[in-house]
Amino acid sequence: MRRKPLRLAVVFVALLAAKQSEAQTPVGGALGSDRPWEIVDNSFLIEEAFNQEEGIFQNIFSWTLRRHGEWNATFTQEWPVPGKKHQFSYTIPLSSNEVAVGIDDVFINYRYQLIDETAKRPALAPRLSMIVPTGNADTGLGTGAVGLQVNIPASKQFGNLYVHANVGSTWFPRIDSRTSRRHVSLFSPLLGGSVIWRVRPMLNAMFESLAEFEQVIDETGATIREPTVTMSPGLRYGWNIGRHQIVGGAAVPVSRSGGLTNVALLAYFSYELPFRE
Image 1 (cartoon, helix red, strand yellow):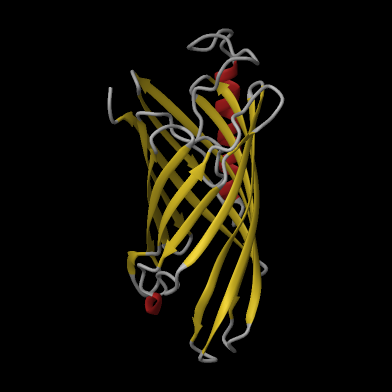
Image 2 (tube, helix red, strand yellow; image 1 turned 120 degrees about the vertical axis):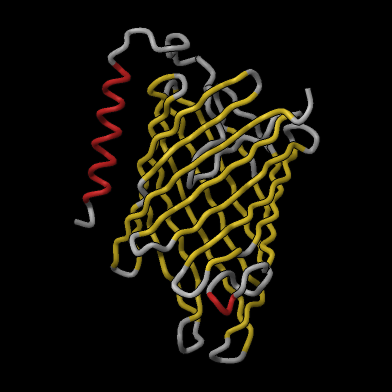
């Protein structure tokens, strides 16, 4: 029963991809290997190495529902500063658990377009984020401490496939251990990757994977590491209206941690538009 949602999602992706492939000439023209991608920077779990273009900003909303009714959502807004080389963004998370519903810790992000993609090299765009303790740690919303997160995404096109890779870490230099009444430092690395298939110009099938090695404080006050591996099949579809782009998508993240498997449903929505003509 635990695997039924995942099986249904995989079957749905396969049937939809087969149906779309029946057309000899997809809407918008043939899918040549040198054709620019119509949808970029719209992954769900894995970060893509592309900053916003000058004059364009993006609004991103995602919502994840877990088996027992708990959910978390994020709203992110990305701005070029003033062009593609530098990007400022912020992420406001909302969470629900057995105790409370509210705002979690806010992320303030800066991303630098270090390398643009070419025929021979991938795009690279390192990101540095400050984690602001806006959540209520007493109710499980947030950590109650300032943190830093670094992520280095790389992205490369191979015809109608796009491959993305992430390596990063989250660091809380001084977090309160209420059990032992002392301050500890927590360091949590992560690795991730994804493959995206352009089924049609505005339809992508996605498979994302993420390995997180979170360091936490246990009930004795000691620090332990809790690995979590997530596999997530999904779909995204986009609409272009002039310089505006709308992207919607859905996925079924399946996570394995502590000997338990958890299946969730993820919904995604993005609206990209110019802030000046």
